[in-house]
Length: 107
Image 1: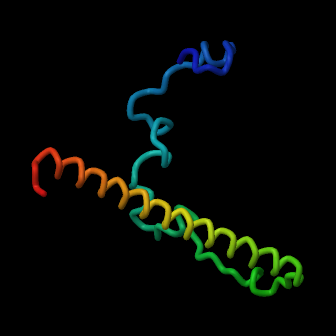
Image 2 (image 1 turned 30 degrees about the horizontal axis):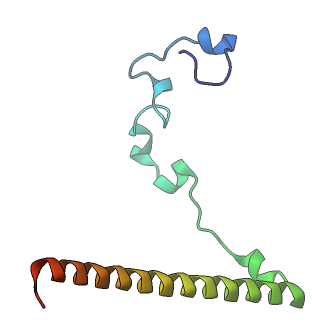
């Protein structure tokens, strides 16, 4: 296999390569024939997330206030960032417009 930056360890250098198209070389253990008579949810163990525990959980007033403060701070930061990016882009557009307007003698 070779050296992968993990330090030269014996098990890395003595590891045998995988056989081409063997069962071990495929991520799902060998082809999609396993799914022929199964549901995909059963094969991959997919379940719908239920948030019952979160709904039952009780939070303290201090924690709720802290979360509200964090959300408002994040919203304020996003708003400031958006406004600054709009102002800077508008300024750059004006500078480019005046620069190329002077070069092309539009005015």
